[in-house]
Length: 102
Image (tube, rainbow, N blue to C red; front, side):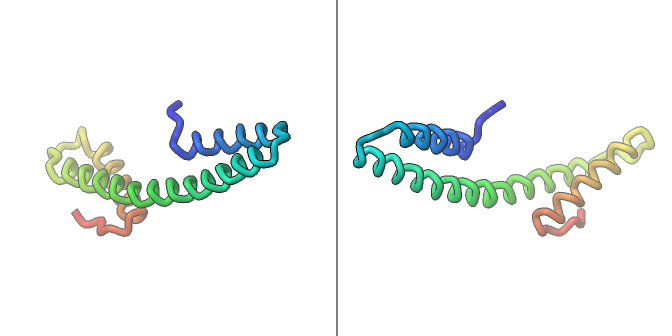
């Protein structure tokens, strides 16, 4: 499994919390606590970036599928697969807010 950036930040926060629990130097505790706060904001930023890029990736996928559907042979052997592709393209259109018209 590939870790996302958010996974790394969450792991860092978890490890920093464990570190703070054992640290006795107040300055070191404050520094670690400030990093935890910073990483929380980075998680929010990364989530937003994922959302922004997700829409463009899904839109590209939708248009790619529509192109395949538009160029597909009109033969019975592909009808089932095309129906599923059209359903997926429609789902993507709903998710992205783009037109599902081919």
